[in-house]
Length: 165
Image (cartoon, rainbow, N blue to C red; front, side, top):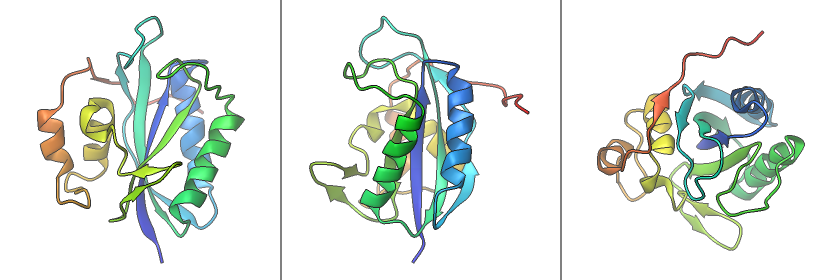
């Protein structure tokens, strides 16, 4: 049975907007998965260490038959293909893909927490989710719009559409 899954994308190394555009295409090609929509890309200050470039972020809405942990494995494989290195917590990265929301499921184990635990505190996640679905609601009934209204500003700026071949 198809489930709506929302994936957050982020990058601040090696042409971040190109990294995200490639990742969107790769996510659209996942098995048993359809890309429903893609948000605009946004630029924001880094969370955590400030001695790194600003981030480019976005989100995609997928309809998938993949189970959450299988989807997570696919996301991590795409990150690895992009040269993701986990050197420093909240440090720079070529690509970060986070499973933010998976239907009405709530998961919390050693590998995966859904909804993503930092979602309420990240304007660069909440705004792209609102762009995808202004009516999106978490399993506990909290609306993404309510979270966005309460979220601190992280110098979020929408970028113009990419001009890629």
